[in-house]
Image (cartoon, rainbow, N blue to C red):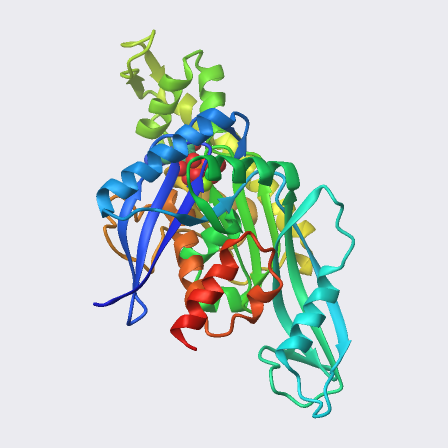
Length: 411
Ligand SMILES: Nc1ncnc2c1ncn2[C@@H]1O[C@H](COP(=O)(O)OP(=O)(O)OP(=O)(O)O)[C@@H](O)[C@H]1O
Ligand SMILES: [Mg+2]
């Protein structure tokens, strides 16, 4: 199939960096043609704490992806994670201008600008201003107001913002690795792109990406996000607990967790013992498998309680008819969905990414939902006919270029 565009996604995670190169074919399919997934160093809980190490990690991912694809990577859609990512909802209203009293692109942009003018401290950087819907002369629930006759246009937006300095440090690392930024995308929204169905987003759903250092959360209703947040807790906390509880190194604890870990204490024979096999100071030692499960259960329970608090705090009575869709590396622990259902009292499923083809070996696992979602986000951004939603997005240099590219395609 003929190639329409090539785009790149980079997810700089706490445990790994993922660089993906995708091609959008003329029939709209997205195929992965290059990937690099090295372990990352230089980040803590999704935030850059060492520039040089992070740059080296990104470079390594980029080089792997370039070698595999034979494509020279220039710019990328980049995920932003870390506990500093937050959101709020804001509305903006304007009088419809022009003699015809028909809503124009300019009216939509002005209304969005008004919504965006909400008081956000100067140490925050706005990542997204996403329209949730429009109110046209009092009529709610309008999704496509362009061309409608009206006097007054109101837009409801979901604004996602992050610490300006954390964003600058991440941007610096990506740029020092030789990559320009097309757009910065909040990780929870990227993960949502890869695992949520349209119906779930309409009904009301949460995505929870359980990573190494963070849990990315985004809540959707009526098709769009209304709460985005990154919780600074993840699979590394579980590993730490095992290391402390069993007095082992982190490496041994990680190995025990992945080999024998489960959230379901009752499923483990109380007499079963497992042997420490990882290369470490205590190779050959025996530990109770039930003890590992108890430690995991306690921490995962806490994680789900925090997630439940977040869902409650987001309002709407904590109602999510389609429940919670879990993803991320740490969602792969045996028994997580069951424990989630028990603590949250709502439907919970674990999902991996869908919607891509090509070189997907080892990529269609929950740990890769965010990077694949970033690629899907990018593909939508560069092929979207109505670029209205990008007119007011922060200009990181890349979007203008995408718009130009797009205009060349459809003059
Ligand atoms: N099979 C498995 N069972 C349980 N946990 C696992 C498994 N595989 C990976 N993990 C855990 O998943 C975590 C890594 O997940 P992921 O790759 O999604 O994180 P990340 O994207 O690097 O980090 P973050 O998103 O927090 O910045 C680690 O804590 C790891 O122990
Ligand atoms: Mg992640």
